[in-house]
Image 1: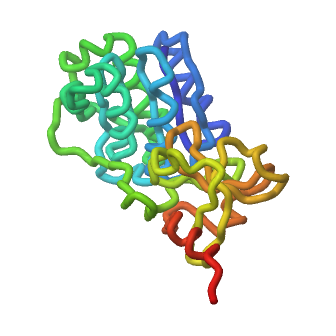
Image 2: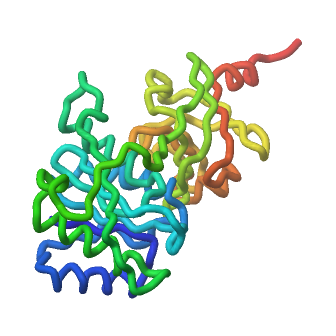
Length: 277
């Protein structure tokens, strides 16, 4: 199959599908076309989460704030998968996740990753490389097969390419400091703090410190563990800690947005409950 993901909204994805259909690609699957606009970092996070659920295939990804500049077009082979899109770093986090499945837990995912520059692109527009560059390249990879990328004319293996790595949080036993990676459509503020930080703390109170101040909330397993609209901290399905509200918006409850710093502390919460003389 060939999947498509972009920040285009509508109707631009239809033009890419037209190119792909005209080149014989029949099995098309839309991942999303409402990724945060012009935000390769958010695309990297969501695709790292979503694409490993797919069987081997070709993944066309167009979140391209540098369209029309000298940034390269690339194809990344990751195990049995291939990702085609702009050279702005958004392809590498999902590629590493896909490669990790191919090599297993004891090997370096980099062993199953190769990056190729697409050198023979001749776009007819400086603003729509999704249609003119990336869709034709993805169709060629789909037709040839992932194992044949190195033999395709105009695909040259490169060692210098843009990479983005999801930043690590600072974690101690009772405190973690990180940042908000993305906010989903429900308003859940997803941080880069690993979910393991909350292990053994469900039912406890945690202090959430942001630029707006400190708020103490419960650590829960699911939204319904608190009353409607109440704030909470939990582990999302992606494996990271998120600041949420039951049937409400966590970003508003905690005054959070992508890129904002957040500190989670059980020590602060305990100290706040100790009575003073």
